[in-house]
Amino acid sequence: MTSEFVQLKHQMRKSNLYHWLFLTPCLVTLILCAGWPLLRTVYFSFTDATLDNLRGSSFIGVENFISLARDHDWWRAVLNTFVIAFVSVPMETVLGMVIALILHRNFRGRGWMRAVVLIPWTIPTIVSARIWAWMLNDVYGIVNELLLRMSIIVAPVPWIASSSLSIASMIMVDVWKTTPYMALLLLAGLQGLPQDCFEAAEVDSIPFSKSFVKIILPLMKPTIIVAMIFRTLDAVRIFDLVYILSSGNSANATMSVYARKHLVDYTDVGFGSAAATALLFFIAFLSVLYVPFNRRKMQDL
Amino acid sequence: MIKQENKWRYKKIIKNVAFCLLCLLVAACCIFPFYWAVVSSLRDSASLFSTELWPSSITLNNYKSVFCDVTFGHSFMNSVVVAFLTTLLTLMVCLLAAYPLARHRFPGRKRVLMIALSVSTLPHVAVLSGLFELIRILDIYNEKSALILSYMIITVPFTLWAMTNFMNSIPKEIEEAAIMDGASKYVILTKVFFPILKPAVVTTGLLAFIAAWNEFLFALTFTLTNQARTVPVSLALFTGASQHELPWGLIMAASVVVTMPLILLVVIFQRRIISGLTTGAVKG
Image 1 (spheres, each protein chain N blue to C red):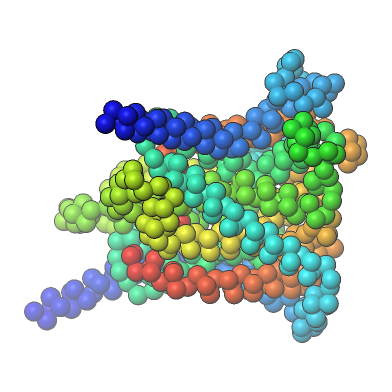
Image 2 (cartoon, one colour):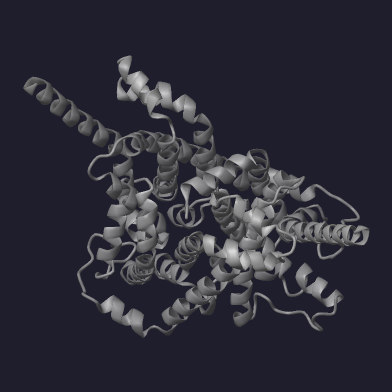
């Protein structure tokens, strides 16, 4: 009995060792590409490091954060980021829900429809930014041309050149690009619901809109909230699209674009890292919202 | 009675027509920008600015210049190599790690999964200066390995979650049978689980490949020369003589070349990609 117990204990310890042995490459990778660089960035934000002089930097306390707080362009970038995130995520959710409901129905050509809907998500962001920049070109763009032809507008609109419209254009392209992903998350939620609630919703005497609001929406609430938080966290760090569509105009920058500009283009690693750390702080703050929902997710594991 | 039935039938037809129109509208919105890129890329420079929806004359000149461009060829190869190696490394590392995470409950397990989840929400710009320093120390600036290292921050978290979820769904009996036969953990993983998981590995690998192929921020920051750049970076830096003379036809042709392989992958693996996307991510 005792020897068996000892043997079992030994075996358990051995298997515990195995676990960590199998986990090591993954953990080392995460530390190398995320953990350590993150700590260094936070450290750099308290120094006067520059791109050519990373090692010889000296500690300057919160000076970078003070000049960041005084920089008008930074607050502009913060505002732009949140406008983009908080306008585009709700729009994506509504459109994504519509697409998810379409894809959830059984009809001929559903496979094709799914592939087609995935296309905007697949196109590299840089490519879609360039395609949209071409389509929204104020002189030669197809968008202005079509709107003029349908006489919705009377004169070409400077979609990208004007700074207020440019943010709206970014939101539109971001919605176009990420709605498919949102739709898939919501579709997974729909497929997880008991299927009889759709049958109940299809009873003819009740209009779909009513059964949707009364039956499907309440059941989908947790999925929708988690998907929205997930997407908001993603939208706040938006970079590629804004980098191309703002073409260096600091009035249209977002936090990521602003931080990279100072970090790389102005080689001011200390100040750029401070901006990046501030962005990190915003994201950490938003993630706190995610925790209660997350707990439930962890329980299923 | 018949009247009632007719009414019901009409209602159904109207509903179906409305549904079809909605589908067409959604499909048109999804496809049109890419269609427009294809159309623009097939125009010669004289008719580039025409806005006919259907091109009257077609030329492949833009594609010829894209394929003859040495820089673009370099970037294309770089993208292929970097995306492929990133995917391979990610899969190896995550398959190993997913085994204990999925099959055993041990202290620290949830913490590892939580760490991976938090890494996936990190703003990439927040690791930029730290990574830059690390890349300088390792002396791999302007090399493919720098890109592969940095891309792992994107691919590892979701691959780890997806692999853990997929491996979780393998019946316990299979593992027990292998243990009874005296198979070691490594053998169980490579000879028993891997064949079962192959479809899931392909799916997740595709997602990792697409993510690495599309990455821009790290590629822009950690490469300097034309020889080292990936496709998204060269596409972003593609400029004409001046801002107002952008070679749009050429840019559109390059865009189509870059996107075509991905669209083909998505059309072929549409079902798998959808299941992979939703397993690796949120599940209400």
